[in-house]
Length: 179
Image 1 (cartoon, one colour):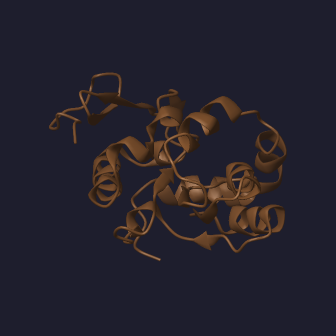
Image 2: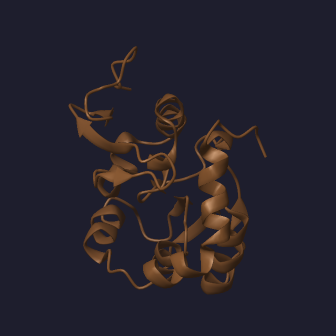
């Protein structure tokens, strides 16, 4: 795995140590409205990247509907639990390691990339957009405001005029926050 960003290792540590309770609290959460909106933009049997799959809830949802899914997560423990739950091998990978040009028809990143430090978020969103149709990125789910478990940073990703914008409470110094 690539070198971890400062502070991000604490987030991974948190998920490794709390994987059991995290899975128990998220695996049955109903995201069908958002999942349906996402898959409505895809063709049957398209290839989806579940980017930061956590419990594997969404991976299983997509697999059960006939899509091909590659699931990844940075947490070793979540990868193990999601693999058991979904029946597929979940790859341990940091967001910054994404490099699969033109492989996926859609990328599902449900409340996952928001854990990245703000300087890394723009880089990762750029990598996602490089090889994927902007309309097929699952930014809908990322529009939900999230607070990073370790840093307490409030983050939100929004779509505006065909571009992705991340918002740190409009206090980002040194960047316009738009891809």
